Length: 348
Image (cartoon, rainbow, N blue to C red; front, side):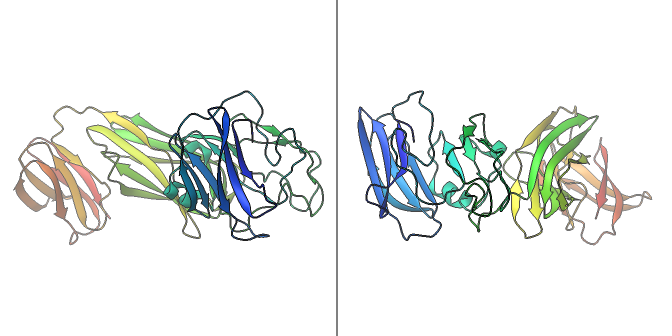
């Protein structure tokens, strides 16, 4: 809490959790009933300038109309105690997240049972995972709780920091940790190709990285799969060269899959190309699943040749996005020719 807001506060022993907002010189409150005691519960509170909302387990438990701005001040944020009072939280807590945007219900539900990558979260001001200690070990040297999203580190006080009862490392057992800590991800021009480089600081049960490509940042295609390290506590470097970028903007992102099938997406990177007379653009190369996807800037005669120069297919096509069935072609190298352009493709 600080003097602008308090959450969650319990005024009747343990039956209700209450959100307090200091608006217009008065405290505005919103209350909801705890479903049970001695069990983990996910609590979230939001305010968008017109409505106060309380969520329990991702379900809207209470709401009320309210207008005005929350009072601001320079007081420190306190977790687990009402500042100035001997009123301490009597329970176990994990995963403190503070946002400068009102999260939607779907956003709350999607993230409530997993750790977050703070570099991919918009509006996440401070994030305290409270898992820096060693479970069952001595944590007496830890006096600081790290803000994973910013620079608002805090000081610990009144914690049991040694032995199996350490409440600094007690964690919600169903919380899903991030399998991969992505340290960097870049996309840069390399001649007429795009060089993608990324590094991981650590990996846990990681399976692979799927490189996804889009020409409009809306519709995405998988263009490559790179095997991950599976388990690592050291920096791992990866790279991939996209040989068929489009004329204009090219968007890239990583889809990381762990061994259990969970997927996390990286931020998007883009590279711009300006090709003169770019009549033919191949949308996905290598060609997979028997579908060659291309874009033509004008109507043209299109031909497909084998690596030995034998003509396999030829047809006059109008401008636009086209899909050509190549499912009956043998795997290998082919050439796509228009009236003034020749490009290589690989059918897999």
